[in-house]
Image (cartoon, rainbow, N blue to C red; front, side, top):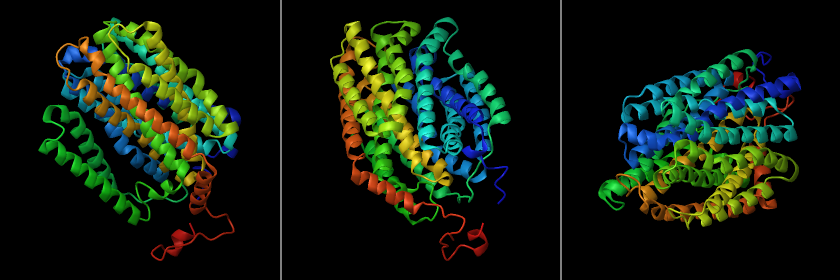
Length: 500
């Protein structure tokens, strides 16, 4: 294969060009992050305009995160197969179109359908962009710093989302929070066309349609069961049937993927304790974060009767921590490894969640903002070590798949966080939100505290010498042979492909 036109690796690009590519990739993260935070701020307005129930609001969020989580691995492996720049540009077009249709949606059902289209485009953005970054930045220290900037972009989207979204909802209406994605997407598309180099894996991976269907069925049935359980009953036949169906799909998925030579979900990655830990921590932290954003938006506007703009201002402490400490965490990871950031993040999330278990309709503002500060600090510190761990031990040809699994863990966590915490804390609330909603959130905050504790324990266990040994063994299994080495050839693989 002639790699010259397709190779986007770091040695072929100047530092300024690499930084420009990083900036373009961060634009995709910015619009996806903006979409999450802006939509959360707009939920009460959507609820009023489209007469949505709490479960309807959950689906407004989860329709996006569920489809995103289901398709991320397919997008990552497809980008490695046919070209990362091509998939990235397609994602920008589809995401921007979905955003436009969300803003034009005449009903809740049409809004949820447009959110699904948005998610299809979004699945082609973040994991593919991270794969591009992984291939452009070869130096581990420079890569860790780039991932820190990536995390800071997420913090910027968190900082801009609540305030910009609140201002837009107050002045123009909730539909504008979707329209704002369109010009950003167009700018990112033009810059990608002009400056992002083409790259793809030297050897294409096979498609795995059965694995993809199993992923969608498992996640969709689990999410539907959780959101519908408050209405149908947690022990009803329909709920138990859906939970059982989801469990069977997950079990079949694991068994099936273990038997495939080139699976959609590469189970061998999980032999690395740091990789497994990073995925599990992402699941815990983003479940807590999804529940945090969902509950606080309803609490601030429905219980404390703040305007969308002022509710956005209340969320600034959390967003500010993400903006400031994500790059700090990236530098910590490059110098001291993942443990300091992961431990500090777990402690901050645990303490913040415990503080919020005392939430009342009249909680002191200073106390409330202090909890938001700590929650934002935990969320800021955890993202760079998760992302760096996911991609650093893998060869460039596996970067898209590894990054997609890490991103999938985030989105699955966000989906389950909104579903579980929303169902337990908000599923029984109907009509106008009242003072009782504050007390109803306490169970959700205890769940967040448990997730913070789990992240803390995992952060310690998966950064030991034993864990590092498992990572080295896993990396060796995926090591790509040098020019003078012959790659082992399975019996069924043609000699021409082995020499490719």
